[in-house]
Length: 243
Image (cartoon, rainbow, N blue to C red; front, side, top):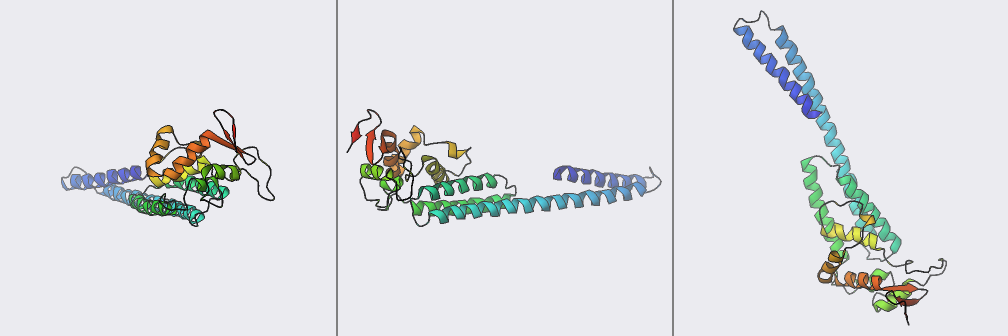
């Protein structure tokens, strides 16, 4: 619409100039048409300017909301907690923030978004630094003692705490792979991706983690091969319990 209004304004402006030329050449008797065209030129140009300003304000709104969501995501994880609910909340906020960022239209706003996105991505890397002794494979099982052996952590993750309901599966305290997928992709990739909460790490992506984030790799591989039920660990390939 903005471009259309500007084209109309330009057409009226050209018509006004042509009319004045024709008047000078004696091909028309007056310049009334030129005056009318100049008036319409001003009207359409003004409307185009108003529309451009509105689009800029809308773009600014989406920029601010996106950055606010990125900041909220980082703040939820800044203390390096491994609380399953906080991670799911952070992933959902991040997902919505990425969706809003797609609605940013102004180039200067996109540049700011890229700069701030890189900053928040760096902060998440600091929080989840694979070289930090606290970020272990056990960390992703949601246990308090992250120095535990991964098998022990898996067992502990399925033991309900006081006030919690019993669960058959190791899904009480461990971090969900869906939330990990959203956070990891934001940390690693700047491009957009569809419905990340419905996706999990592909085999190729998991193999990449072997080099880039060994604790997360170990966690995913262990979780795909073992299942913790009421404090006991079972090998999914043969359903044999491990004490």
